[in-house]
Length: 211
Image 1 (cartoon, one colour):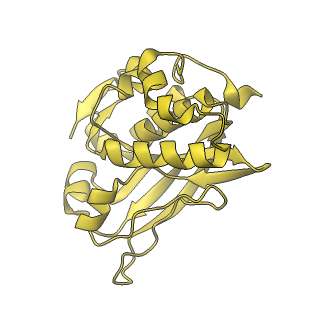
Image 2 (cartoon, rainbow, N blue to C red):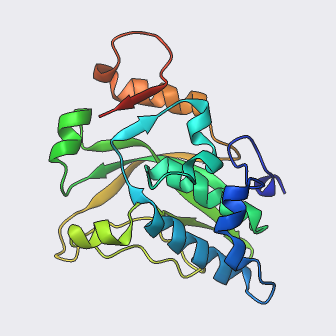
Image 3 (cartoon, rainbow, N blue to C red):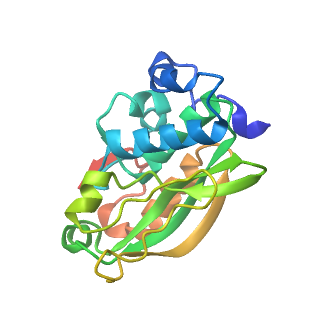
């Protein structure tokens, strides 16, 4: 299956990825248990950071992301996909657009909007069906904003925290760009320039910016 292969971006043969999945290689552990374990690891061991964005090709490699301590939603999704494929569990990238409703002051100041795009999540194939899951928001960040962390049970979708624990609207998906076999960097660059034109005052290729 094409969603099991190694690619330039999902370079799971790299030592850094192999170290991440070492504890899950036990054949006595089910694919469901392996998927839950690597999901929790990526969700919580890399802090969510939406403000440092690199669109250079190299920085979207799973092996490069693995060396960091934080990442945005797309980066963390790429890392999780690489881990899942390394464990022979089919996985692919899914992109969309989300609107945040809590703690959006800095987001609005930097991006000119409370919408984030492209927003990354993961599709994983378990028990003969594709599931959606998002490893973006680490548990400590969720607790800070009074939002229940997304748990993944290996059987149901786990990608949307619509409300916080007080019942206030937290986030919503406003567009779905579908799933991708590999990282669609050209599409992502066009998407960023279209939605945040004030950040770029030239037609030059986007590589990296920090907000």
